[in-house]
Length: 620
Image (tube, rainbow, N blue to C red; front, side, top):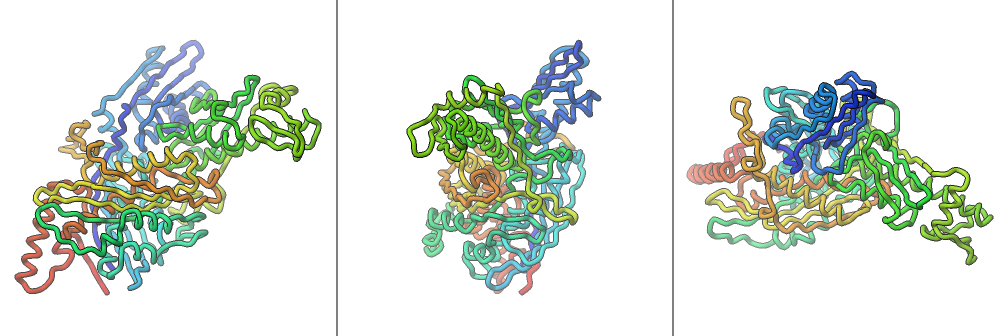
């Protein structure tokens, strides 16, 4: 059994796009139109109605095609309410753009977190028990705090097979900016602690870190202790991919002879994340996702979706899904997104829900439209629908040369009804929504992504500076509907994980922010980026659209612990605090050397607690 304590600093989203809102009040009609950068336009709509005391039908919310977010805008924010109230008071249009400092002061960031974690093991490496206590510094307001602290515990499950789990989570109010959701919501800091402890356990049990992970793999389908349903599980293939691509075994077998201050090391870790939350923002009983398709005289297909594209490419993905079902070129498809006057309600872009949930709704809508078009073609050619061979731009009667072009089919379909409107919906199956016990609802998901990461670092032991030389990532995204976009998302997750691991940290003095600009808040740039080798593993989830799962968050969690493991491999010191800044690491290395010298003079080895400064309890 091993027990350690870990500290993770508060970090901010650092989205490039500033917070901005335009609100227009139509005094004659008593209507309000709001355009904002929100990730949750329909949640914003609900909150505007409640805050301003307006009937919902008198409010229109439009989410323009503006990127950024990473969770910063996953709840309605103060500047949106202020802008709307000012527009009504002025009887006209008001634009409000926040400064970068404003964004840091109202950031809804990832909370500073303290984790005390105890893991029990068999000598084979199997995890017998998990005992976790997590304390999050939540800031001044609750917001998504309840979800964040519950995710931290719920996602102890579904990555590995564990024998027993106890979790206690505490969300603490402080007189600081509020914290909330951020990419990898709730689970990143706890995963750092978990994977770091696994790495130490592997060393003490004389097991390769890959072997220890393989001793705890799940076989899908699998039901976790907290009633999460795992239907697809590509972690074994992810482990194989990064082990081979990085040359891990050759590195582990070689003898290290490193002179001078520059030391190289390898480290690895695993991660996972949900593909959408099964619990909606609106408790109305409505479907979790709705898509409308419109087909008119011009032969163009309009996808109407309430889902917000915040740069993750969801609008492109929805067009791809529809095109794949109908077998038509993308040029025929246009997407109209996130306008409450035109598009169906959607719960928002968070918890990687859009690809999985809204993608399924788009698939069903496209299937419904295809049935309408096939029936129209069958009527036009006076045959049964089962005899129609559909090829998108053309169709024909099976076994004959009789056929129609897409434009002819559209004319036939519109002949009696005019414009065609079809709908597709999707809701999370009940069996994937978790149990009825306290906390079971959070973390529920219809599918989980999986990933493994190996990094190589170079540590300057004279300065404490860490340079990431290369990163190998394998990500199980189910079916990669847009492989190029998936690779970009995984690379972005690596950069964000590097930032949290090595440099990013908010700081306050008597409640005032000390790092409220991009000059003072240190994020990785392209100059800091290593080559990132991405392998996509397609496990084909039975519930995902074409088998797809999430692709943007699960790759982040493994980066900080993999970097910590690589630093240990290079220096012999195990970091237990994030970020691992040069000054912090240099101080730890000095203490590590002093402890080794004291141990050598005393004629006996020192404990891990003496050499790393962590709280330690061990039993055999």
